[in-house]
Image 1 (cartoon, rainbow, N blue to C red):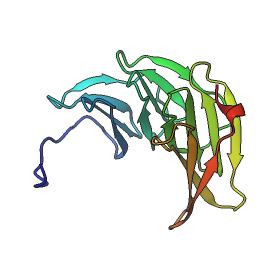
Image 2 (image 1 turned 45 degrees about the horizontal axis):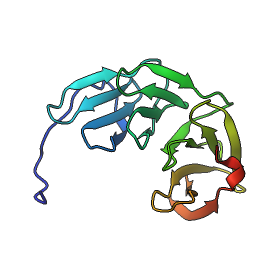
Image 3 (image 1 turned 30 degrees about the horizontal axis):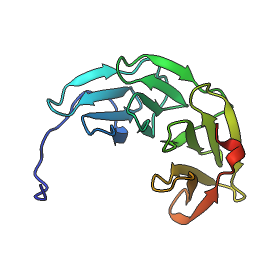
Length: 177
């Protein structure tokens, strides 16, 4: 369909929606906002579940490659089948602008307003490495390149007012669980 025709309007948030992500199979949609993170069934537009334990603005949500996990907020991991909060990854985090799973689902990256990209082990929640920006007042966003067998991190450095540069960083094998 290339018409741009409206298919559905999903209503359930009380505050503006900051982020949306489709599940890998395309059957679910996650949405994050300042009030809650919601998992929707695309086929009927109904709320499947409201993810538990959110207390902050969610600016980014991401599904694991197999669709079993959802990450968002200040590094919360939820089970998509139930909405149950599985883990809150611990670190001195400010605002988290972006989250991304590695192609294997074993690593999770978070990009923050504190000028860092953090790499986490998904299974244990262990913080593996923190990458810092050398420029002040920049946000860091992270995404894994899904098309390479040796995962690389793509980090977008973004000035508060406009995008300045995108840098590609190789993540050493030492940081792959």
